[in-house]
Image (tube, rainbow, N blue to C red):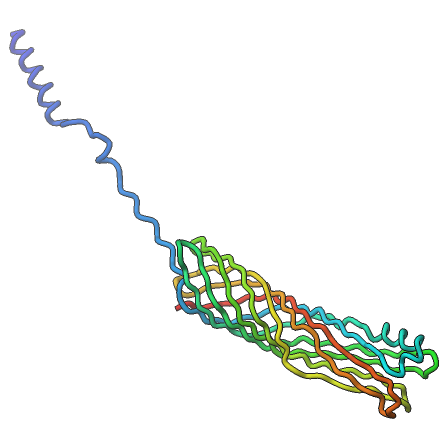
Length: 260
C-alpha cells in the first residue's frame, strides 16, 4: 500500500513539472522598442511672409562753409543746432525666398532674398537766432519706404530647430529733405531721394512645425551709410550749406515659412 501511494505521488509530481514546462528565460518577455522618428532634412527651397519691428538710428548733420567762415559764431551755433537725431521706430511687411542645403550631418548653409515695405519716418523743426543774422528756421525730415537684403547663412540643425547667423548686402531708399531759412532773406532748401547700398549682419532661430511649415524669428543690423546734398544761398553770396544723414536700422522679424 505504501509503495502504491509513493508511486502515485511521484507520477503527480512528474505530471505537474511536465505541464509547467521550462522557466522563461526573460528574452521572450521583452518587446522591441519602436525606432525613433528620423529628423527631417532642411535641404530645399523656402518661401514665406514676414512682419518686423524696425528701429532707425538716424543722425542729420549740417556743415557750413564758404562765406559762413567769416561769421564764426553764427556758423557754430547753426551747425550745433542742425546736427540732430531723427531716430524713430516703425514697421515692415514683406516676404522672402531662400534655399538651404544640409551637409556633414547637421550643418546647414543657405542663401536668402528678403524684401519689404517699410514705414519709418521722422522730422524736426526749430528756430534759432544766430549772431550777426536774423532768426533762422531749421528743418530736417527723413523717410524710408523699403528694405531689400540678399545674403548667406550658416547654421547647425538640432532636429526641428535651426539656429543660424547671416549677413550680406542691403538696399534701401532714403528720402531726406532739409531747410535752412533766414526769413525774407537767404534760403537753403534741398532734398535727396535715392537708393543706398549697404550691408547687414544678424542671426535667427527657425523651428520646423511639420515637414513643410516653419516659424522663424530673426534680427538684422542694417547699415545704409549716408546721403545728402549741397546748396548755395539764393543771393549767390557764397554761403554754402551741406546737409547729410546717416541711417542704420535694427530689424526684429517674425516669419511664417513654407518649405519644399
